[in-house]
Length: 395
Ligand code: PMP
Ligand code: GLU
Image (cartoon, rainbow, N blue to C red):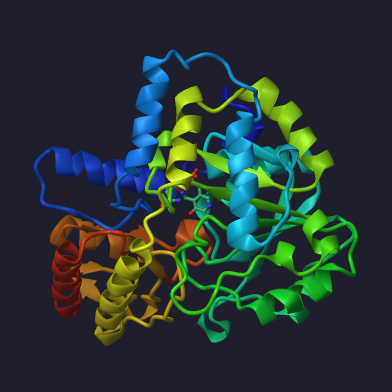
C-alpha cells in the first residue's frame, strides 16, 4: 500500500521532461547527443526582457505583486490580444500564471467537478490528460490519425459530447503533430459547440506565432457566444524562447478568470515579480524573423524524414515538431534487438545513434514518435544523418 494519494498514484510523470532530463544528463557526462526531445526553442530571451528584469531587481521590485499579475502586464496583454488576435479582453479578463502548464492546471481545477468529462483529441500534449485526472475529471479521448491530418471533424466531435462534458481541449497548432486547424474548420467545430451550452473550450494557442501555412485563427473569434465560453491559454516559452522564466496567461470570461484568480491566490500567488517585467519587455521585442527560421527547419526535417524508409509523416503546418509513424519498423531488429514499440525505437536510437526523440505513447499515439526541430540546421542535418543510419541498419 502506498503512502501517496490515489490522485498522484494514478498519474504518469511528464514524459517530455523525463526524456529531456535524461538526455541533458548524458550530454553533461560528455556524450555527443543531439537533443530533439523537448519542445524548447533555441532562441534567446529578448534583450528588452532581460533588461527590464535586471532593472527590476536593482530597483527592488522583488516583493509580492497582485496575485493575478501586475496591471501593467495585464494591460499589455490586453493590447496584444487586440493587435494580434482582434479580440477584446479587459485586464480583469486576463490572469498571468507560472507557465502555460500552470494556466491549464488552474482551468481544470477551477471548472471541473468530479466525474466531469473533458474531451481531448489525441495525439495530445502529455500534460493535459494527467492534469484532467488531477482535477478528478475524466479525459475522454478522441483518437485521430494521419487520415484526417490528426484533426477532429465536427461529426466526430458531436458524437463525443454528453451531458457530462465540461470542456474541450483544442491545441492549434498542435504539440505533438504540428497540425493547425483552418478558419473554416474552427468555424465548423464551433457550430457543434454552440449547440451545447454546457461545453467550454480551452484553446491552447501557445504556438500561435509558429504557423507556416495559413493564418492562426482562434475559436474565440467565431462569435461573442464562443468567446464567452473559451479560455485562451498562451505563454512566453515558445514565442519568446523564455522556457525557464515560467510565464503563461489565460484570457476569458470575467467570472471564470475571477474563479481562477481565487484558486491561484491560494496556490502560488503571483508569478515571480521580475519575470512579469521581463514579460512586458518581451512583448515589446518580438523577433519577427524567427518564423522564417523555423520554416526552413521544418522544410529540411520534413524533407529528410519523408524520404526515409519505414517512416510515414504528415506535413505539419505549425509548431516545431514532426510526428512520423514508425509502425513499419515494428518486428524488425536492430543488432539483434527486436523493435516492438515506438519506445523501443526511441531507446535504440538514443543508445546507439545518440539522438533523443520522444515516443508517441504519452501523447496518446503509440505508433508515432515526436521529433522537435527547435535546433540549428547544422545539428538537424547531423541528427537526420544519424536517424538515416539507424534505419539503414534495421533488419
Ligand atoms: N501547451 C503546449 C501545447 C505545450 O507544448 C507546452 C509546452 N511547453 C505548454 C502548454 C506549456 O508550456 P509552459 O508551461 O512552458 O508555458
Ligand atoms: N511542452 C514541451 C514539450 O512538449 C516542454 C516540456 C513540457 O513541459 O512538457 O516538450
